[in-house]
Structures are given as structure tokens and as C-alpha cells.
Amino acid sequence: MSGVNSTFEEIARALEPAKTVLVASHLRPDGDALGSTIAFALWLKSLGKEVTAWNEDGMLEKFRYLPEADIVKQPEGTGRKFDAFVALDTSVKNRLGTVLSAIEEPAIFVNMDHHVSNGRFGALNYIAAASPATGEIVFEFLKDRGATITPEIAANLYVAISTDTGSFQYPNTTARTFRVAAELIEAGVDVGALSQAMYDSQPRRRLELLRHALNEVKFCCDGKVASFTLTEADVARLGVLPEDNEGIIDHLRSVDSVVAAVFFEDLGGGKVRVSSRSKDRRVDVCKVCAVFGGGGHALAAGARIAGSISEVEERFLKVLCDEVRGID
Image (cartoon, rainbow, N blue to C red; front, side):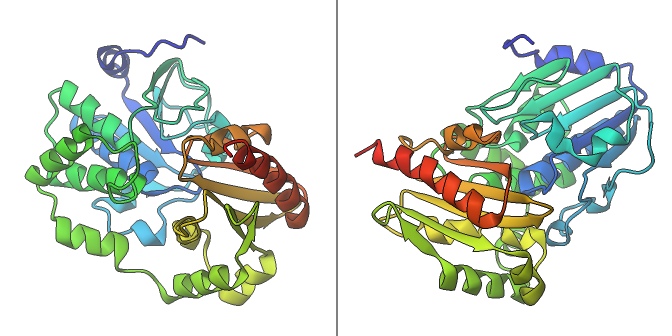
């Protein structure tokens, strides 16, 4: 497929005749995936279209504070037909999960994302790797179309951008990002209330998971790599949900000597989910994850790897440590 982006005009023109539209994002969704999905779905609904918003995991408990959160459902049925399909914040097509098996291939397939590893799997693609969040791309798209940014759309896009920039801390946060945030606030975002929902309303079980991670953390590669594992037995004992894992890895990365942090989660069935973070652009964790069929961003990437958790841990850390030693 061409590496040239479709224009916003071309995407809008392709969607114009569609009466039924599916909007979806990657499995194990984060705030960017869900916020972008809801915002785009609300815009489409304002145009009078019949809109379905799906995610393999449905709407996560931790994001139910999002306005119109109930619009996001789990896939239903098989062979469902839609005139158009908009995939958001999804770098690899198969990360749409069971959404794909529930539908027939639509004539119009739009892929909008900000992951450098995106495979451009749509018929129309808009990939902006320099953008800190897909939510920012959706904002730019809606502004380009002259759409009204309602308070509900604004709140969802603000959460998308805030969560994917680490609350505006990550290196890909630009002056434009702050200007977008300001426009969203002007459109009706209550920053205090939304920030409390995002960052100060965690279930106790997440604290128990953090305690486990801090007790079990391992350091290797001369203290430059920190990692922890979560087995199926740990999940059962702690009573945690998959959504509780998000952000735990950042506590490991915050150690001054640590260049990269890794979280290994046993998914069962001989599969391990790997989440990795770097705070040095010379250590590209997307490159490391790509060795194992994964992808993402240079400073934040992941993969699903076959094997036992101990085997995957050993293999992944070997490749990562080789990368880290390369910057000495």
C-alpha cells in the first residue's frame, strides 16, 4: 500500500455516502483508543448516520466516566455489514481482535493512527507518527471539517490526549498539543473534574497490583532495565482486571538509573503480553518489540509472544539489554 496519507477531504468524501458506519479501536484499549472512538462516533451521529462503536473488550470500567461511554459495545454476531469501517489508534489490523470476525469486509475502510509501526491496512490511511495521540488527529480532522466540538466530544478528546501524553509529559507533546487542549477546554472541558476521574479515582486492587510490582521488580543490564512479571496465579490472588495494569510500568521507569522498563503478563494458553517503555530515544523499544512481531512507538511499544512467561522474559530482556548496551 502507498505510504502517502489520504487527505482529510478524501476521507470525509469517502464517508459521506455511507449510511452505516462502524468505529473501532485496538483490544485492551487505553484512553486514546476509547476517547477517539467515542468522539468520532458522536461526530458521525451528528451527520445523521447509523453508527456502531465496538471494541473487543467493550467499555472498560475505569473509563465509564467518559461522556457517552455506553456507546462503546463488544462485537455482536457474525457477518455484520457496514457501509464503512473507521479503525482508530490501531497499529496492526489484527489488534482489532474479534471486531474483524464479526463483520464482512466493508467497501470503505479508513485507518487513522499515530503509531510509527502502523501497517497502513486501510483503503484510506492517515498515519501521523509525530502526533502524540490519535485524539489529536481526530481533533484536527473535525476542525478541518468545520465540525462543532461539543462538550462531550471535547471531553473525550481531552482524555485521549492527556492519557497518551502521560498528562502532557512525554517528549512528543508539542506546543500544538497544548493549543489543542486549550481549544478543548474552551469547548467545555472541566479540567479539574476530568483529571480527578482520570488520575485520582483508582480502585484499591490497582494499589495492590502496584505493591506486587514494587515487591517483585527485577533489575538487570547494570540497573538500566527494570522489569516485573504477572502470572495467572498473581491475577487470581490479587483479583485484578487487565485494565488495572495500565501505568504500573511507569513507576519502574521513574527510577533514575533505569533507561527501559518492561512488564510481562501471562495471558494463558502459552501467550505472554509484553509492554515496554524507554526514556532514552537511543533505546527504541518499538525496534525491540518488532523482533517479536510487535510494534508501537520508539518510547512505548508492546508485543504478544508465544512461550512460557519465564522463557519470554529471558528472550526479550536479552534483546533489550543488547540495545541498551549499544548506547554506552
